Image (cartoon, rainbow, N blue to C red):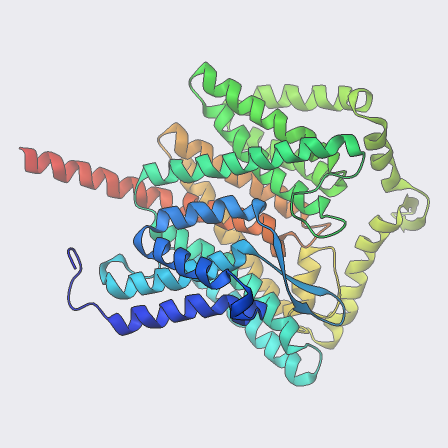
Length: 459
């Protein structure tokens, strides 16, 4: 085979191919004769083996535009698997087969985030095994949750390893934004219904808070490209895209999302001199005009936060909040109770209770060990992304990195009122973008070295 070093390990390729074909049936429990999943898996394996870029573009498009498939049922909830979940694992096995054949590609791009990720995964597994042995966690429930956690990091490793040119980065950004605009168009159609806006293909009732988190990340990305765009047409496009996404974002009625957009803009003001004064003006005007221009139901939703349903005393003053706000406050009390019983390694994933707070959830599931690893991973990612932004020398790199950083801050804020870092429709694009941002310096260096080598050969 041209370009491949040594003998092709056909056995390994066949092994990964069989895994890729049968993993959908193992997850979904579908009988082969009644499903086209096997045919899809075979086709996708071949595509991913021959051209990983096309396979990853399919993953991008499916992140928000894929239906749910019923995989089973637990005592408390249904197990739903999305098409992109299957895509990712099939592509992963194709990727592993390709690495076996083309050894010079390497398995994982080196960066300081690999260590924290692996340690956090290990703690999640050990904590869950401990919970299973003690009877606190069901095997099947823990398996599907851990599978979901690992899926995000698979995306990070696969994308990071596959990036070698700036053209790839720009292509991925194009399809990420295209997917967002399609989803927003569908969301605009929902607005006249008067219901809270959610992403397409959601289960009954939808997940407006999840959609708000996704739009926070996408709007931050659009704002970054708007700030650093040089051409007038580009500025008009990015500003128009931001507004097009902002209206559905408001209509999600997600109070955590509304609050989270403020720190997102503040970080833009801190990091970017170019954005400082326009965004300060925008924040002031928004604070003055929003109470008058927003629909009545949006204003009612905001006022409901302080409905007199629960009363807390803080610094000698009584504060009235709604039931949903009170539930998020009570989550901390519940966490302290559970931590007192298992403070080191936690109760295991998924912890046995629904908690609308990412930090509390990590504490309950994995204890102080897991929480420390999680915060280490998050802080490393943030520090590395800021370094990439500060060292970037072109507008595309600045746009992508600052958009990711500010969206990251928004999601960290939203995590105070929701378990954002386990949400499939937020974390898949998040870790995809994280891989792109962290790989950019190496990609640029590789391209420069290639250009210099070409010039030397020409001379």
